[in-house]
Length: 265
Image 1: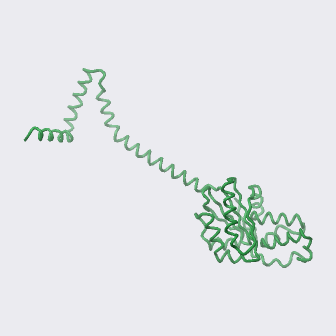
Image 2: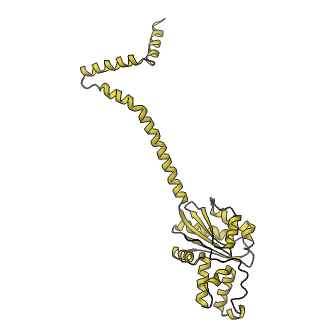
Image 3: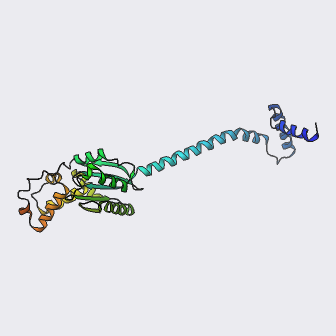
């Protein structure tokens, strides 16, 4: 065996040293420390050797914990409501939208709204896709005919998101054959509408109609379609209510559902 081969073998054997050899090595290091006070203690080396595997485990667990916290935090942001969109024809719906513009909840505010909710997949989709899916569905599209009126109200403290949702609603509804209105509303109005069991648009229209003609009741207004409410409001403004709707308690059968089905928030 050449001298080079011998050195290679010795180097290899050192990588697989026995416990006894490691012990002798540590003893020699300790003796060296006694001769040189500034040399690191062998106990420090031993402690360091004992801690290294544990340190790696702790580091791995810490990394996992940070990842879990990041995921939980991201999910919390995803699930946090940033806007509410009330969509009303006669079906009344309220969609909850997160800061990313994704619909995370959908609530039916009356019986016709419940039918639409069961027919159209709305959750975890961008709001623009949802409003498009609603208009193209048979369940909602049958109400969006030429003589209908679709009222959309957006409630959000995030102005950028609120304006975006109004713009998306207006753009989607511009292709519909019926009349529509898209606007912002405040949280106080939404709270008052919820207390009355109505969506924002229907509640605002009911309040306007009752202020123009005190003979109307909230229950009557809740049973009307948005088209009927707008027509009666327009008639009151033009002074033609008596001619156009003799005995306004009759002939309201076009409204297919009551608005009092809203759940409390």
